[in-house]
Length: 485
Image (cartoon, rainbow, N blue to C red; front, side, top):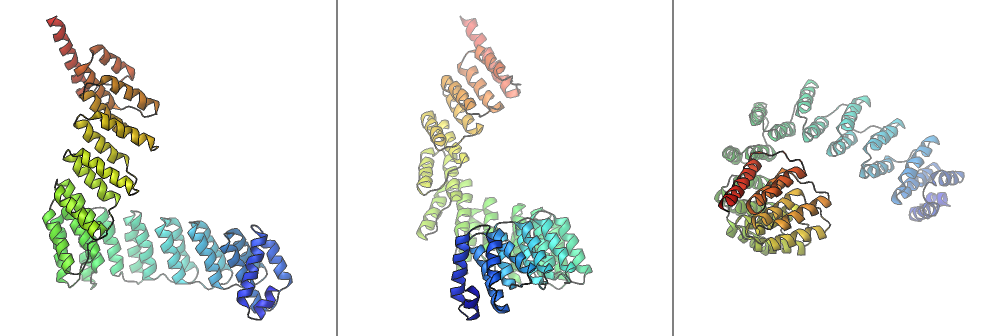
């Protein structure tokens, strides 16, 4: 029936019937369904459509092994399905990140006599590189020649970029040499990839040497090349050199894009130069580039680190006005800035706003606010926030417990500090040297010197200089008290 429908060009009906059969037979049915269809085979043309449709139907129902088995049965019976059908199988394997199976299946396809395609080799290599599968990517690259093709500049650049992504810059330069030995001249993309690798390793001198070589070879750097150098200098703390590259870029008639501006703005913010960062935002706006979430979040973070919370909150309002949603990075920066200014109550309100919007607040942010309340002596609120963290299924780290414990000890609440110590240990949080130094300091100041000795013996703590001074100081105070009696 299926062959009859195909022979009479009733392809939609044929496809529906195939899907019904596959759906009813289910998983692991490929051999039986294939055999049944084979018994009623029609013309060569209908056979191709039927078996291609069968493979597609198994794929659409999620039965990938059956689809592969159908392909192999077609090969066994000398049916040649279209390459597009084979590609669908490869795509499904790729989506499952079954990279070894993808390469193995493509070699199987080529072994059936399908013509090799440099475009497809390059595409496979790109996807393997993107997934960090460099051994497979190199195998594909070597397979280009094995299957009678010659690697192109795209082939070399794709593999080179993969190696740079995983931090293997030496292999990147080796490929450049091989590329040149093959008679293929490195292009702008080649140089940009290698410059990016050098910038990531903070090898700015080498990046500029390569940039000069690029110019000597008559190649014109593009905006990506310039932005890469700008980013490298900014991350190296040399915003002045980044601005030189930026001005050079402008002199060449290139227009910086949003990525370029965000890179320089980030550099100025990290350097504490908020005015220059704001000037650049104004400049980009005049050029028709609209600041995005990254632009504004970078400025918020810079303002908070410099203590300019007024500007930070103005930027927040601008984002709301422009309907640009704040992300967790922006909120965390604002909370950090408020905590630094001793405005922990507002910081807690900001945290509540985050939670209301569905953001997951990390432990570090909670700890910042707990620390803020402890510094103000409000250990009750700090303790409440710790319980809130625990009720959310979190397991706060020793750092969070240390912050609250320090708050208790500063207030002379040694009983609460000891209870907290026992509670954290029961939860599997191991105290560290900071924990014991906090307790030593507290007991030396408010407690009994005998407690200090017990505390030291409890975990066999090796005293450092700070804890040594705490113990001696406490014993001295105790001695003075006894001498007065």
